Length: 210
Image 1 (cartoon, one colour):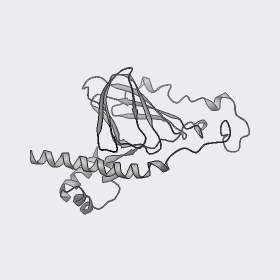
Image 2 (image 1 turned 135 degrees about the horizontal axis):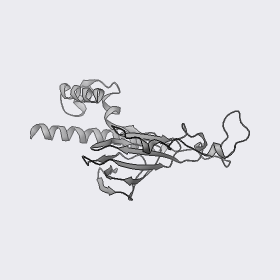
Image 3 (image 1 turned 90 degrees about the vertical axis):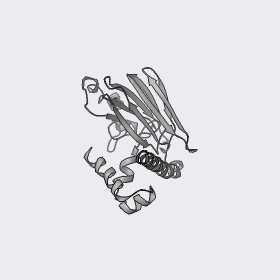
Image 4 (image 1 turned 60 degrees about the vertical axis):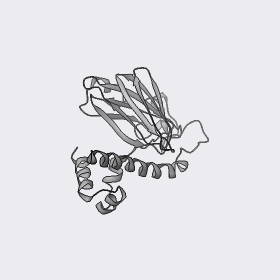
C-alpha cells in the first residue's frame, strides 16, 4: 500500500507541475490573424483547388497499427492551413493503448469518436479531473492548454477518433517525456516529487525502452 500511494502521489505531482508550466504560457499561444483570404506558398502567385486538397488520410483506415498512432493534417503536411487556425488529426487506438497525458498550448481540441470506445479526461486549473467514457458518435472538447488524455481500455476492440484543433499547428507536449527525458537532474526530480533517485531512474528507463 505504501508503494502504491507513493506512485500515485508521484504521478499527481508530475501532472500538477506540467499543468502549471502549460497554463503559465497558454495566453501567449495562438495563431496570428491574416489580412487575406489565404496565404500563398512561397514563390507562387496563383494556386488551384489542388492546393486546398489534402489526400494524406486516404489509406490510413486500411492499416492496423500495433501501437497508438496519430496521423496529422497540420500546416506542415497541408500548407494551405497556414493562417486558417484549423487542423486535423486521426487517432488510432489498438486495444489497451492510450495517448498519455499531454497538453496543447496552441489550441482547443474537439474529438469525435468514429469507432470503439474511449476513456477521456482533462484536468482544469482548479485541479479538478473531468472524465467521460465515450462511445462511437460522441464528441468531447479539451480546453486549450489543459492536460488531457485518451485511453482505449477495451482489450479486444480498437478505437478510431478524429481530433480537430483551433490552430494550424497544434503542438502536443506529452507530460512524462517532457518531465523525465528532458535532461533535468535526477536529484532535482527526486526532490521535486518527494521520492528517491532510484524511482526516478526506473521511470526514465521505462520511458526510453517503451
